[in-house]
Image 1: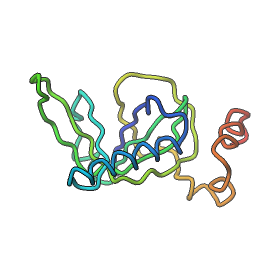
Image 2: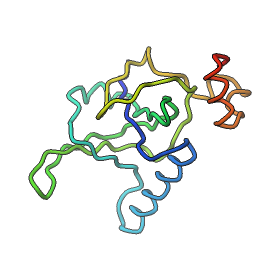
Image 3: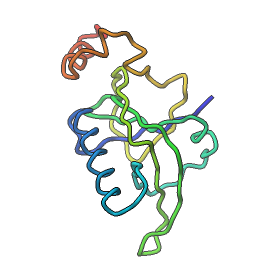
Length: 145
């Protein structure tokens, strides 16, 4: 069973914003002749990398809700120019919406078990997936979703 990571999408107001950010980073990588992948750099290196790379994803928290995910494809520890240990979380550049779930703010990243991970919107039913994001948020806040 895969293990996942969860992280705050700082500065993103919506899944649409996150998708635009990922697309921009992929275009930048393409211009530089680098592989098409989305890379997020973090300070800490996950110790449970084998479990994470066995089908795990990075779930993004946007405006206090788990809202989207990207499939993890590599975890690359490295040292920056100042000699400080860092980690590249490498993901497929495809943002997948999930059924929104409230999540309080935290620092860094956390592990998320497969049983605790929210369903993808496509698995929640056609009506939910077709709803605008702001409407899903309102319905979730009212306890109707």
